[in-house]
Image 1 (cartoon, helix red, strand yellow):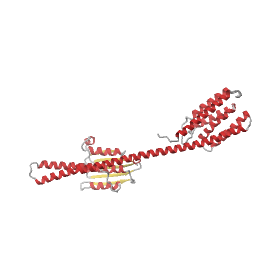
Image 2 (cartoon, rainbow, N blue to C red; image 1 turned 60 degrees about the vertical axis):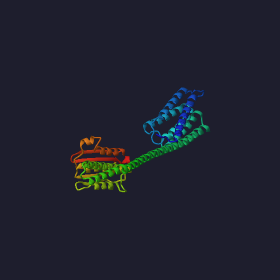
Image 3 (cartoon, helix red, strand yellow; image 1 turned 90 degrees about the horizontal axis):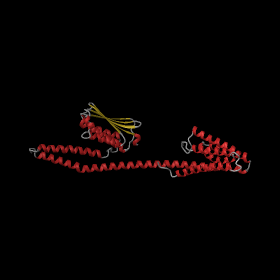
Image 4 (cartoon, rainbow, N blue to C red; image 1 turned 135 degrees about the vertical axis):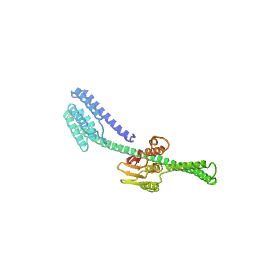
Length: 394
C-alpha cells in the first residue's frame, strides 16, 4: 500500500489536534485545583478525565469515505456523550469553554454540512452564555469563543481540503502503479513472443531445412538405386525424416505468432476449419454471442489451441464430423472443439509423453493466459473446451 505525499501532513494535523485537546483538558483540571476554582474541583477533574477518555475512544471509531467518522449509532452516541459531558463541565466551571475548541472539530468532521456549522455556532453561543453565567458579561468573554470558532472552522475546512487532495493523489498513484504493472506485463509478453518467433526462424533455417534436404537426398537415392540391398532402410530413413520434418514444422507453427493476417478471430478459425475439411471429414464453425476484440495474446492462444485440437482430430480421431464453436457471453469467451471420432485413450490423457504432449502444451498455453481447459472423451464424442474470463484478459 503506497501512501500519498500529503498523508504525513494529515497525520500531523490529527496528532496536533489530539495534543491540543489534551492540553486544554489538563488546563481545565489544573485550574479547578487552584484558588478561585469554584469549589467543584473534584467533580471538574473527574468529568474532565471522563470527557478526555470518551474523546480518544471516539477517535478509534471506523471511518467512512472522506474524513468523516463513521455514521450511525456509535458516532451519534459519542457525539451526544461529549456534548453532555461538556455542558456538565460548563455548569461547574467557566474554564470548560476551552474544551469547546475541541468540540468544534468534532462537529465539523462528524456532521454533514450545513449542520456542522450550525452546531459550531450553537456551541459558541452556549459557551459564551456559560462563561458569562460564571464571570459576568465582557467583550473578552464573547470575542474569545467566537474567534476560537472561526479558527476551528478555518482549520477544519483546510484539513478537509488537504485530506481530499491526499485521497485523490493516492488514487492517482495507485492508477499509475497499476498502469505500470500492465505495461510491464505487456512488455514481458511482447518479449516472449519475439523470442518464440526468433526460435521458430532458427529452427526453420536449420533443423527444418536440414531434414528437408535429408529427405530429398534419400528420395534421390531410392530413385537412383531401386535394387540396392539397403533400399528398405533407405525408405525407412526417408519416412522417418519426413515425419520428423512434419513435427518440426508443427513446432515452428506453435512457436510462431498466430497468423491472423488482419482477419478477425472468427475468420481465422473459419480458415482453420476450411483447411481441415475433406471428403471424409465435415468441419463447421459456429459463433455465438456478440463478438468483441480480445487482447492479442488471448486471440493468439485461441488460434493456436484451435490449430492443435483440429490437427489432432484430423490425424488421430477418425471422425466424420467436427464442430468448432466460439461463444461470447457476459463474462467469458469459450472455444469448443467437438468431434464424433474414436476418442482419446485414457492413458494418453494421463500420460506425460507421446500424444499427451500436444494436450499438455494446449493446457499450458491456456494457463499462461489465465484461462481454463477441460476435456471430455469417449468413443463417438470428444469435446475440448477452453475458456478465458473477459474481465481478466481485457
